[in-house]
Image 1 (cartoon, rainbow, N blue to C red):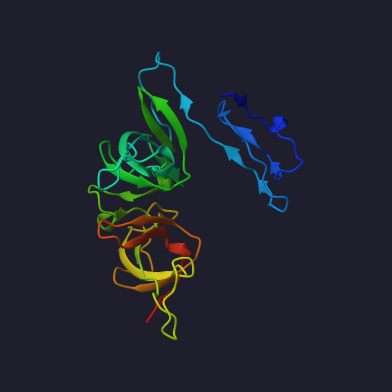
Image 2: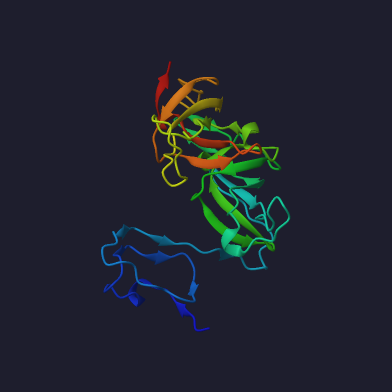
Length: 252
C-alpha cells in the first residue's frame, strides 16, 4: 500500500477543508486521504500529533517545572465479554501511572511542589500533553494542571479530583417525550446537568493557598454542554469531569 508523508504543502486546497497552521510533531504516514464535503468548515491551527520516539541511548527523562511524566495505560484489546476488539474500536486510554515529576512552579514568592507522587494512578484530559515512546512503552508528558484526578480503582466513581476539577454523575437521559412516546437513541438529547460526586481541593491563589470551590458533593448542577471529559462507570452510568468554572448553576 502506497504511503505519503503529510505536510502542509502537500495538501491541495481544492475539495478539502481549509487547514490553517497545519504542522506535524513527527513524520506521519497516511494510507488514504478522502476529500471532505464541499461545505465543510475550516479547522484553524490544527495540529497532527504522532508519538515522538526517544532514542534508546537515553535511559532517563526528567520533567521540568510543573510537568509530569505518565506511563500510559494499555488500551483494552477485548470487550467485557471477551471479544477481541479491532484497533478502530479500542478506546484511547486517558489514564496511567506517574513515573516522574518536575520540581514544581512558583506563584509569586512561593514555590509550590507538585502534589502527585511517583506510582500514583491518574486520569488526564483527553488532548493534553505530548506523547512519547520511551523505554519501550508509551508515555505522556503534560502539565500537572492537565491531570484530572487520582484513580486507584477501575471505576470512575472513585475518582479523587485535583485542583478545580469536579466529578459529576450525569442525569439519566429521558426515555419518553412529555406525550409518552418512546425516543429513539438518536433523538435522545444528552443532559447537561447531574449530581456532584466529588470535588477537588480548589485552585491555588496568589499566595499559594487553596481556594475552596463553590460546589459540594450532593449538589445538582447545570454545566456547559461541551465541557469536560466523559466516562462510563462500572455500573453503566455516565460521568463527566470538568473544571468548576464550567459549572453554570446549582439547581435547588
